[in-house]
Length: 309
Image (tube, rainbow, N blue to C red; front, side, top):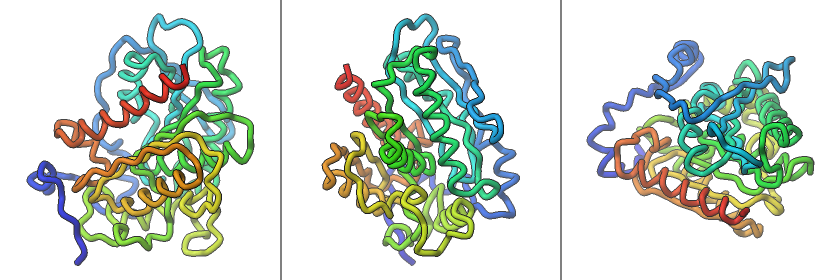
């Protein structure tokens, strides 16, 4: 049985992690549970929802600090959940702080989930939200030349794919991509993808997530690179990148490889690997390793915003 040592802060509490293997039988119950209680939000940030594609039910939530004036940089965010779970509400707490701390406008997208909507539906939803944000930048108080994207887990996979799609279509210039433990390789052939006893996101859950997202494409050689960005042969012309991953995450190897390939393609890329950290380590917010994981992301974000001026 192939395993990897957990960080010393994680090991004592691993039995308390409530995530089960996700499959078709328990997916409805997990969705009803909303992935835990959402934190309370301040009154310092106003949030407005906008329908960007009524036919497909695509909505974006715009977050802006109360009283903020002028055109601000924008961070466009895609929530995680293995392509099968989650909601844009998961971004509320992040933008409640980021909008105040960094003077940005946050936009989070509610994309359709799989298996009900397989690829390319969720990615096109994310692109529709991004294009709407760009087209309506003046009304939203956004500087359209200072838009970056971010996502965690499956949201990180959609974020990487969105960067590729935006590059290919040439309609929305992106300035950076922050990829938090991105889910980007459907083939599941790396050593880390075969680890047993993975916390939070098991290899069985991973297989179910990819099967749900890819539908009939799953297991074939015909999976497009905008579905699984690890399959992309050309990574040139992409925006500056940040990739972070835990050493005890099944996505470890695919994410490290992707970061190295980005850098090799001439994309300024920063890679952070946290030994012994499981998937979604930021969920363990009271632990030092989780706080460091999040602080490093924000340090990079701050430097990107300074670069853009």
